[in-house]
Image: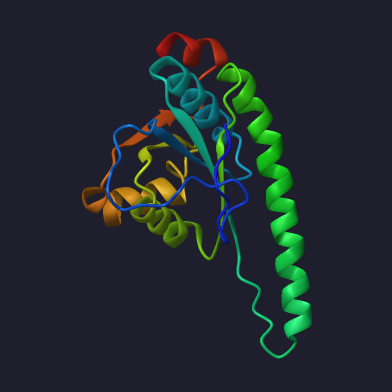
Amino acid sequence: MTDQPSTDTPNAAPSSRSADMSQPNVFLVVVDNTTEMRVALRFASLRAKRVGGRVGLLRVIRKADFQHWAAVGNLMREEAREEAEQLLQEHAATVTELTGGEMPILYIKEGTTKSALVQLIDEDSQIRILVLAAATNARGPGPLISFLMKKIIGKLRIPVTIVPGGLSNEQIDTLT
């Protein structure tokens, strides 16, 4: 299955504000460098497999802020994008294995994770659930979950699943 690429993403689903129920549900996972992200990835992949959905992987890169040296800014943007694509491909291999061969939808956005996430959810009607894993440290569930819970959870058009970040693979397998 192939998707039409857009300017924002290397492997993107068509964007539409109206929900097309014939499209599979997309379980969106924000790809970052936390250990709990792998828990969210496994949970989303196995749920998608169980219900005939797909996984979407979002990686957000910071905007290069070199207005005086446009060439430097462009080079930094290209390098960040290449790193994001490589990271997404690595996690896509895991998703493909866990889902029994279904390649995830890959999204790359520029900006802050919070704003890019909200914008993507608003833009892509195929995204029907956001899957995050809570941090296991004493400082709280993590900045993204804290932001969502305090600021916008009631305004999102989709449900959010928060998975405990300390779950083992066996526990996730049982839950899904």
